[in-house]
Image (cartoon, rainbow, N blue to C red; front, side, top):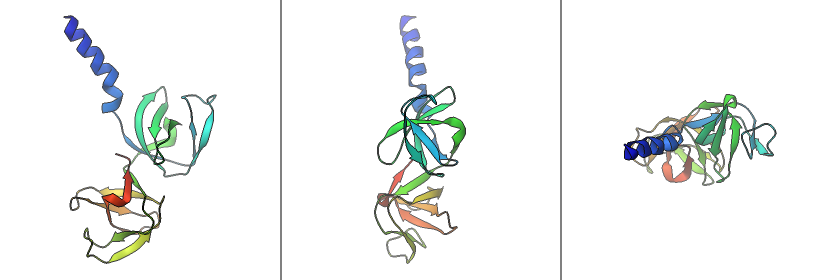
Amino acid sequence: MMKAAFFALAMFVALPVFAAESLQTLEPTTLFDGPSKKANPRFILSGGYPLKEISRVHGWRKVLIFSGEIGWVREKKTRPQQAVVVKNNNAAVRFEPSDNSPPIFFAVSNVVLDVLSKKARPGWLHVLHVNGESGYIAVTDVWLNY
């Protein structure tokens, strides 16, 4: 019985890891150092910024961002969305998922792209730029929020 109680407690403590979501900010949003409006603001994230959820507490989400920083954002300021941040300058977004395919456009570092599908060829993602252009980008050129 003691083992069963310990296992149940371990599963409860680990639950936030399994419940993690890929998120984006809905609008410019403050990243705080704690789950409270009274916590210290770290900086402002732009609207549409990708986040990796670490845990949730009473209307707040603890998140990881592209730079490696960890902080807290208001849950109501986020939405579920898989996205990537371009990490290599002039990363080619191509017509097909292949290095031999012609580029549709080149994305500079720190540009955010929504993920339309992960079901392209292994190592490639089908992505959408905010201007409406879509294509395929190599996974090695981006930071994933999932």
